[in-house]
Image (spheres, rainbow, N blue to C red):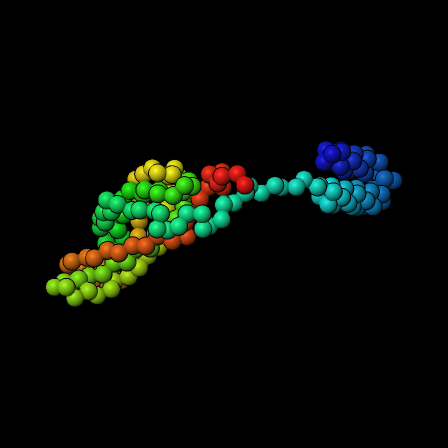
Length: 173
């Protein structure tokens, strides 16, 4: 349909160049052509009644954070020294398929048993883990300002939150 308006515009310009009497008609003809094109586009846009059916989303509380177990957690200093590479294994002890979760990691420096908090960072872990199965994961966390402290005995704590399940793994109701 767009090509039809282009043909009218080109034909109008050709006639204006070829015939001197047609030059006074160029502006009104092109204006009307553009107006009709815009009106047609608006009608098509408004009449487009395609409905998007959203994929069903599983409720957030299908998998409790307690049903996700993290093991074999390792923390490696990265570049720059304020970042750490975190690796471990996710075990899904729920009846639904894990889609994603938030992992909050806190770093504290604990020389001689006296702990000084360094910082906390949260990472989004996207991992599809079937019920009863395990899967390795890797993420990165950053503790700004930790390069100003000499961390001699790091102590790591972590919590799992905002656990999401795949909608397809829910039993039919």
